[in-house]
Amino acid sequence: MDEVRTERLLLRRFRAGDAEAFAAVNADPLVMRYLGSGEPIDRAASDALLARIVAHWDEHGFGLWAAELREDGRMIGFVGLAIRNSCRPCCPRSRSAGACAAMSGAEGLRPRAAARRSSTASARSASIG
Image (cartoon, rainbow, N blue to C red):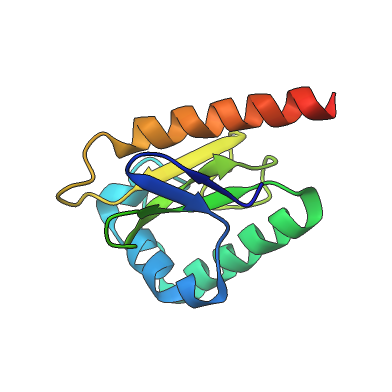
C-alpha cells in the first residue's frame, strides 16, 4: 500500500520532488523537539534521511509516509512505521515515528494520521500472517 487517504490527509510514499518541503519540516524546532536529538536538522541531513526512508520502503515494503493536506497538497510532516535505527534521526528508539508542522490548520492531524497508520499496519500484518 503506497498511500492512505483520510478526510483531511494524504499519507503517501515520498517522491523525488519532496526534498525541499521535507527539509523545511525537519528544520522546524517545534517539529523536531521530540525526535532524534531534539534539534532541527540541516538540509544535508534531511536529504540523507529522505534517502534512508526511500531505501527502507524499497527494502521492507513499508516505512514513513509523507503527510500532506488534501486541500492544498502542502507537506505538513511524516508518519509511519520503521525498523528500529533504520531512519535515524527520526526514530532511533522506537518503531513508529511521526511529526507534523506547527502550522495553522493542522490541528488534530497527527493523532488522525497515527490512528490511520496503526489501523493500516494491523490490517497489513493480518494479511501477511
